[in-house]
Length: 257
Ligand code: SLL
Image (cartoon, rainbow, N blue to C red; front, top):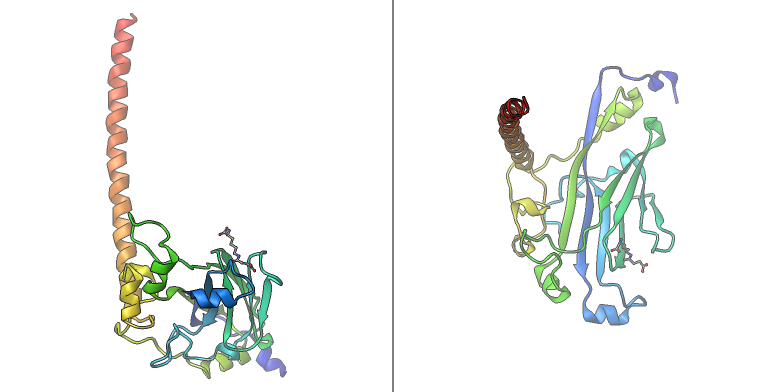
């Protein structure tokens, strides 16, 4: 590689949106009978994908091939799995398994060598059981869960590269990500906007859209206001109690004279 390409472009940050998460379905009684692990109840797929979905695809995300900047994705499963550390070296960067329990999956993304970037690692909580509203039983029975359709648990994120090498910057700009759809056309890939997966199943496979970011900002702002209001309430309470303490202390002092 020519030396000029190994120059970092200072002051430049470039990002790539991506999603990570899982989809899970309940195994049919027939699938369970045929399985060598009859205690397994679900089939799930964990994946790292582009945020935008391909038109009419029945998967969440994955419109773009990310292998121009991702070399390997390692999914580190629970120790109950044989060879828990699974390397995926070509797209799609995903892994399908069966099992009976939820657990934390460590996801490690290794970038192409010309990036000069360190690998990044984070966790995803493998979700098998449907999102429920508070007050509902935590985990619906399997036959009910099966009727509710696939469970989707996906997180949107952005990988930011600071001061990238010139050659890596050239590579990234040659692969602009497919933009997310502006407006909501399908259900969103988590429970907040559509409590209960029945609705999700009716609306088809969920997808990320640009409105979700604005909606999240509104939620964050509302939460911030609620925290400030709560702080003010307790601060007022504290001052009142301190005054009361002072008053009572004076009474005690007067009595003990
Ligand atoms: C739980 N803490 O108790 C979790 C552990 C483990 C999940 C979940 C099967 C592995 C196999 C499997 O689903 N393990 O049989 O290969 O819920």
